Length: 488
Image 1 (tube, rainbow, N blue to C red):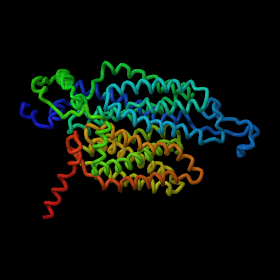
Image 2 (image 1 turned 60 degrees about the vertical axis):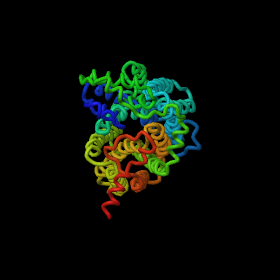
Image 3 (image 1 turned 180 degrees about the horizontal axis):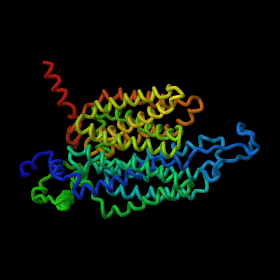
Image 4 (image 1 turned 45 degrees about the vertical axis):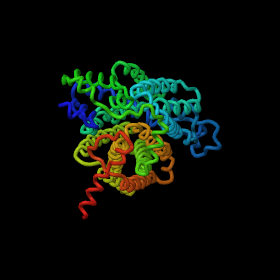
């Protein structure tokens, strides 16, 4: 590649495009990020089996009276519900999931800006290790409210998913973002399947927590094996480090590039501009404000439907561990399907289609005849598969709509406020006594609303990641000009 090519404004993508996804460096990077995905998948829904629903009855044999019973007998005396005496207090059981999602929402407001300030690598290591330590401490909790506090704290400061996701996007060129993202996110369904297996083999909830969270201590070794994002180094005006990294990658992959040429790779740096000012500049743009509101609708809908359907899957007929694993297998197919769709098509139509199809599956499922249980389960799993489709598209789409300077912060803000959905999702099982199909109906309506909101944002395909507000505003303008010209 000649130096003249690198002299253009958007040159980092040209350099990154030289590196193959299946060469040694990116293969190692993918494995490191997959481990992040696995832990995030397990931690974000640990309460599904740790705080499992357990049947109980009054010691005097009357199982229908709550207020008049002094002592309860639990089917599983070693369960979370039994140890903390939660009979007739189902809201305390579901509150665990809500506490986790609430902590995660507040944590993203902190983790995102810190990642933009101190780097993706630093935050991945810090949050990964802290999450593991707090999760292990939770297994020792003697009191319910202490457990709730630790659940909140672990989610708030112990999740490395966001910085890992942004680092993943910033390590590859525009042409390879979808493929690399799909490869790295297989950790989510893999984590769910491992979670179901662990919960099946380790039924005691305290021991299960230790099994789930101890591996997170391995994040400390990322100090030696993980590199900082080249885009982040460039944007912080740390050009020498960025150049050294590009040289390192090229050597490991056996495709050496001229260091003198790499030193000419440049991006505008605003490292000295306060984050508050950068966010202000972003929100002063009417186009970016509208995108933020649409992204917020997407995130609330995605987290509500995805987490809600995952939580309620253990209530389906059959073995709850197998059902949970089957849901995860469907997510795996969805991830690879997304890689194909987003590689060959643009973003908007696939997102619209999956939102609406998912909504239809959820709205129809409760009305299936009782003698066709298999069809009801099939529709439920299909709806969950669609939620995996549009959640993955939303994750990528959101990152592509905002500039590099605030990409992580805006993604974190959308993801954080979007956790309103996952805060409400653990409470949906409480609706089933009124009508078993009510949660599914609500999931369908919410997905339909999110699909309709998608009409308000520009389409995206292989456009380079925007670095400035001006570049972000320009997304979609070319299509508008083409439409105007075609009408003349």
